[in-house]
Image 1 (tube, rainbow, N blue to C red):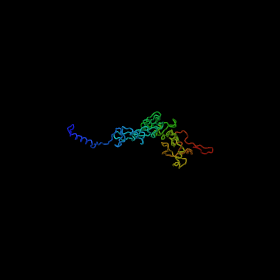
Image 2 (cartoon, rainbow, N blue to C red; image 1 turned 135 degrees about the vertical axis):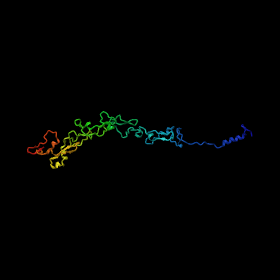
Image 3 (cartoon, rainbow, N blue to C red; image 1 turned 90 degrees about the vertical axis):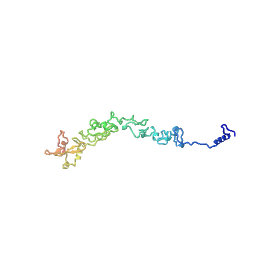
Image 4 (tube, rainbow, N blue to C red; image 1 turned 45 degrees about the vertical axis):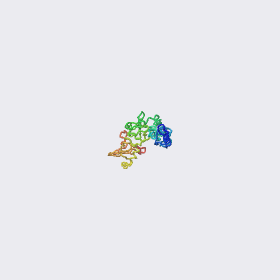
Length: 311
């Protein structure tokens, strides 16, 4: 056999080459894993999306309860991110307080202007716009306001009712009571205010600017409401002893009660009854109730027939 160029028989070399050519092909085994960022969504590897292929994830908020947002693709796991934090956007008409939104478009989350006066709006960052609201309720005590509901009483210094204007005007100021809480219109609540102590029996006087009236007073200082006095004291020991007598009482501090006085003579003769005789120790009630009066405490008045008509 003719030797080949490397000194080996040519036939032997041909046999080796043919054997190599006819031997089974060898393959390299590779792991089929996730390769995020290659622009290809490998479903077989478990990829839901790929950051390099926006079309594989941007519309994934559709079908959720925040369909107007833009989804994302996790750059490590190639999974779609379309949860609330990703898909919620200011302007979708839904208030997401967990994301810092106070409102969204026309959705004001049930809120109105502080004080309820004006038009509350929502700005483009989904926060309240109070520029069209009244200043009442902004936490600042401003001119024309008695108080502000966003400030505490200690900061404002709660006044007494006597310091506040009454619905009766300067001619009849408040003389008793303490105001309640600060109202939404930046005025103190006045239903606990009153006129007890002004020396006048106020039956039904306006308490506030909403039309609420006071409980009719029974008395005030030395002044008494005659009908109430007679009605409330009609079953006392004085009245039972003599229908023309009633107890001598003082007016309670709240102007809504009578306080019997501990006197040696606890009864007096009612106005309208016959005057007590000159030897009687019983006084006329007019004298008791009006100690500063210059009028005669008791004077019988008779008609033409000699009948008593007034005392």
